[in-house]
Image (cartoon, rainbow, N blue to C red; front, side, top):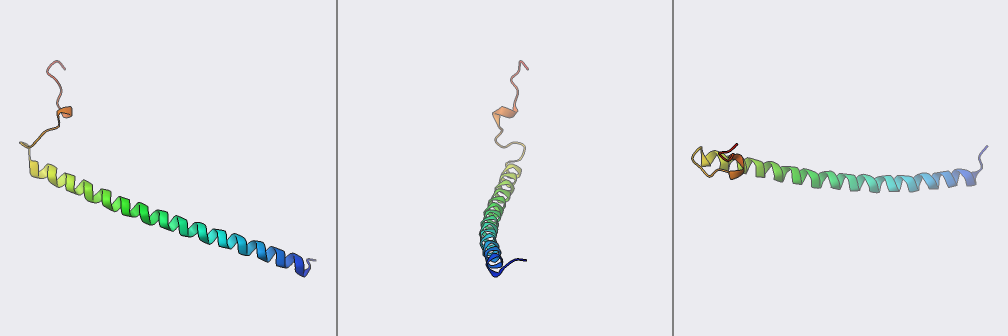
Length: 72
């Protein structure tokens, strides 16, 4: 049977682990938040690029990398 000292020691260890777990959870939440901000920004940039491409139409500026030289 465990004595009061052992129980207190185990409880202390659990409190320490809980504290570290809460800190890790906060860090992970902040990471997810920052990633979502980046995703939102990238989605907006893609939408803007699509709009620019659509506004340019078929006669708009073309990327030379998309065109093959005559000898191909």
